[in-house]
Image (cartoon, rainbow, N blue to C red; front, side, top):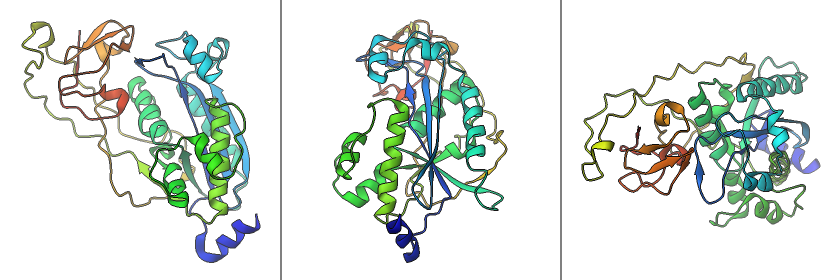
Length: 322
């Protein structure tokens, strides 16, 4: 505590009143990709931006819609039981419950009308890929504070050096902390990330925004498609239309102030295309790669390079065809 306050006295006061650390767990299968991947555990840990103290914690299990039965691999990896998700809530409800918890937990933050809040993750996957994709896929609005975040890997590497891609457990131990709880339990992962955040603050590290979502790309007329698979007539049909996303508004009351920070590079966002009308039936990527039961059967090979929605990459060839 004294070290943190000393750092504040040296001009290293953090830009945020609170940090909310999230670490989603999602549906998964072994050695394959699942489509659509859905959040099944929604945990969050609230950290005081001045002291680094954990103030409160939140967790809701989320009931998946497209793959309601968890695989054995998923259950063993995350420790989440089938009855946990069966008794869970929809993602939209989880977002509302999280926002209500966050407002209640920060209600006593002095006399400020708006609380300065930042989301913290380990990596960019939680906010850039998982939550954003599922909300777009299902037409769910989310609070605007999820549109920018702090990837704690960035200040960790700045403080400890090294260009290697260490995982969260390795980073916690490198900071001189013991790992607490179960790896891949979302709440335990979030708590350990919060402890690592507090340790970086104790060392006088400035915690700033590292990532944000670029505005949705303008809708463009689709160019004429040529078959990349040798002229196969079954794959040359026009892709399903991309539906216009509604403008981003914050339906959650706007009680939290976003603190902008310069981002060196904005990564382009993919068009989110629902395969075969959003159903988990057998369908094909435009390049011919099959998806059976919502699981991609390998790797796209005709300009796609990777499965675009899951990887968060932009691919001009990517579309779905029945």
